[in-house]
Length: 316
Ligand code: AKB
Image (tube, rainbow, N blue to C red; front, side, top):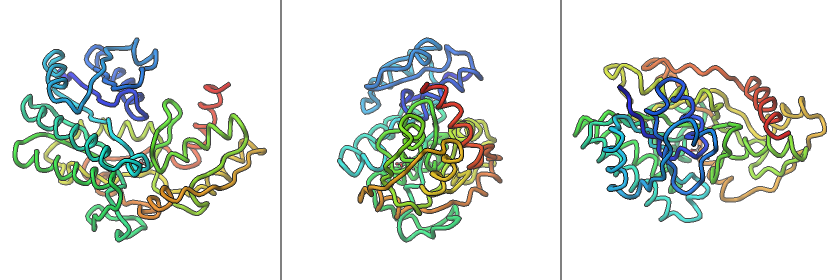
């Protein structure tokens, strides 16, 4: 029987993944762990919630023993833009917590989900339809930690048989919990501002194309990968996935179809722009399609329509 621990459960992915998994498994078998942020009422009331510092091995050890955990979705991390404000912190938080999780997984035979990112790519990576196997020379601390994480997951699999699996998430768009500290965050902020104030100041240039995905597809991808036949997985911890690629101007024009008064202008954030410039515009997900059947449902138009509908209800 699955006994699941989700770290970073109050974050953008974790808050939705927890509820998704509680629909599939028994609520009491999906343990949501946050660090500092208070959980939503729904998260707290639908199953176990605990505070956990993943930088401390002994704390994870206690939780894994207490709940007989055999599956860990390790989501807590510092994202790209925040990581550039304090690179040493990003290294410590992202790497110390992952190595603790992998050690726990080795000692208690847990399966691990690891969210890598398009941040593993760098300026020397081909930008369009970036292949699965390609040059990986990230220039952000976040990207360096994500790439190191992929290598660690593969090392723990090859050396100790730890079943660690992961995807390279593109920018994720969602309406439940806003992201924090990422370069792709504009693609979420824009919806909140468009609905509330009918205007938005974008921190990336209008033609900055990036790979993106809607949260329901991102969550389903994580679960499908964890359920996939292990023998078929060749690129275990590092699958490219995306379901759309767009730039701020595309998004502005599409939102304007629903909110005609919406206006957008630009105030470029140099750090975020240079991070975005170092990432691909689109990635090739065919390897994930072949090895475990990755198949996103939402395209760009569906995503915008659904975001406007859901967020309008939430904000009004
Ligand atoms: C970020 O912008 O840092 C993240 C990511 C692409 O990993 N959303």
